[in-house]
Structures are given as C-alpha cells and as structure tokens.
Length: 311
Image 1 (cartoon, one colour):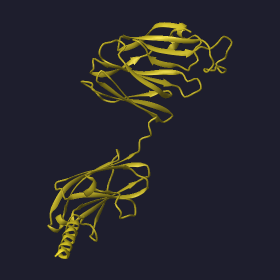
Image 2 (cartoon, helix red, strand yellow; image 1 turned 60 degrees about the horizontal axis):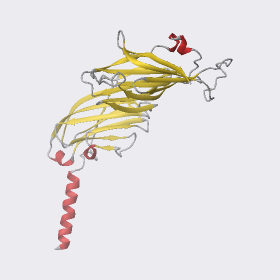
Image 3 (cartoon, rainbow, N blue to C red; image 1 turned 60 degrees about the vertical axis):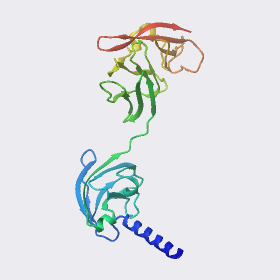
C-alpha cells in the first residue's frame, strides 16, 4: 500500500509539473522583428490561442538596457527572454512576473517569447496581450549621489558626465505644486551639498558646491530655494570679480559651508610677490572668509555679502 501511495504521489507531482510548464517545447514558434522608434521603444498588441507562441526579435548591444513590460488578459499567458543563440531563458515570466529590465552583457539578437502555459494550451484557451519593449543606453555612473531632507522637503542630488562637462540633477519631493527634476550644466565636479533655511521662512534651500577640474579648483555654486514649499527656483550667487575687496588675491581652492544663518565661503590668498602658477593651497597663509546672507532679489533669491574678514 505504501508503495502504491508513493507511486501515486509521484505521478500526481509529474502531472502538476507538466500542466504548469510552458506550451513551447517542440512547437512551431512564429517570429516577428520589433521596430523600435526614435526613443528605442516598441509597443505591440497580440493574441495567442492554444499552442501558439510568438518570438519578438530585438537586436541589442552589450551595455544596453533592455526593459520589457507585459500585460495579458489571462493569467496563464507569460513571456520569457532568451539571449542570443540560446534556448536557456535568462528570464522566465511564469516565475518572475510581468516585468523584465537588465543591462545586457552580450551583443546579439534577443528573443522575447510569448506563450500560454501547457494546461491552458490543452484547453485551447486564448489570451490577448500588450508587450512594451524599450532598449536604451545604460546611464553613466553618477559622480555624486546624495539625498538630503529638511522640513519635510527631500532633494536627491546627482551629477553625471555630459560630453566635455558635467551636469547636476536635482529631484525634489514634498513640494505642493511642482516636483519636476532640475538640471544645470556645471564647470567642474560637485564637491558637496547641504540643505538649510538661512532666511528662516520655513522653506528649505539646497546648496550644491562645485569645484573646477583644473589645478586652480575654483569654486562655484548651484542653489535652489523651495519657494513657500511649492516649487524650486534658482538662488543667484554674484561673481566674486564684481567685488574688488572680496576678489583681491583670489586664486581658487574655495570651500563652502552652511554656517549659523549664513553661507560661508573661504579660500587662501595669493601672497605678495607670488604668482598664480606658484600658488600652493596647502601652504599655511592668510585665508579670506566671506559670509553671505540670503535676500530677496528682483527676480528671485540672491546671496549678498554680509561680512568679509581674513585670518
């Protein structure tokens, strides 16, 4: 009796495994090449019945990101993703779901196979579906990536190479009207970022510090104010050259920091008789510190010199 029960249990398990397997082995599979638009996207709608299967072909390069989103009218319809010249799927939809996204390691022709499970195929069931496929270039690694938060407003700050320069990107969250991303071209690399409420109005500001990539390491600033917690607007920092007292002896190597109610900026001064080429920021010497207050301007906020001293 025990022997018969074991045989019966094994048989039932085999039936379940076969019923839950794809209806694709040994069957004719229709092929269709995807036509990607200028954005690298293709959307197709189709219908399969019984033992039908469809392979959607897409040519991809190593390093590109392939994303597939599948929606079907019946839960027994799925898709797999097969790499070039292989029947071993790198993604099996019946186990992993209706969305695939990955950076590809091998160049070649990938197949997105749509099918019904074997039990549904035997019953000659049908399913309609849509398949959205996107092929994009993998994003460059971020040079800077930091998330800051103050007073319930969050800022995700990233920086990337863009051609010969760089860009800084800010994605806010928690603003009541506009949380769209902001991008600015920068001359150099982001060295840090801070949040503050210098004018104590209950709406935070974001200060992003930038240094030029050359030996002078000149500082600059990208800054935003969360206006009444509704949307972002730029904060303007006047050029140092516009103030003769502040600019005298300046040769770069700036450092920025949020201080008590002000934004601080300091840098080593060029000594008398010293040339710019011979300037060494690591040498002990006179430092100039500038303190800026945040004030309303004609078209937004601006940082205005409040105090200047040397030590």
